Image (cartoon, rainbow, N blue to C red; front, top):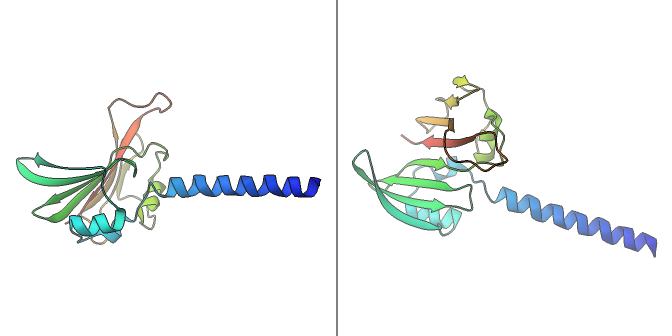
Length: 154
């Protein structure tokens, strides 16, 4: 009887671990797979956004899709073309350049960095810029600081 009880506990633990991992992995997506996609194509890949809206950035109208469940990803389009993606709340990730691999990039050393403020890559094909910036904004109490991740398309 004890063997089956132990086996049951083991399987329950494995199921809980699998659920936790799948929940966490669903927060991330392969940014390079979105290159050249329209808003409709991105929706087919990532699912329905939590919200959509229009906003002017530097006086230029942009269409935005917001995916709160994906670390508060904001996907920006200009003239119907994917322009940039901002990850506003990558809070469970550490402040390390290796986290870029969570978003579908093979890790490589940043071209420019200041470990106190920025990691920046200029050599990912199909991207003008990939950056992680520390930001000054209200943060959850358990964090030392906050940061955002930017993916800029040409």
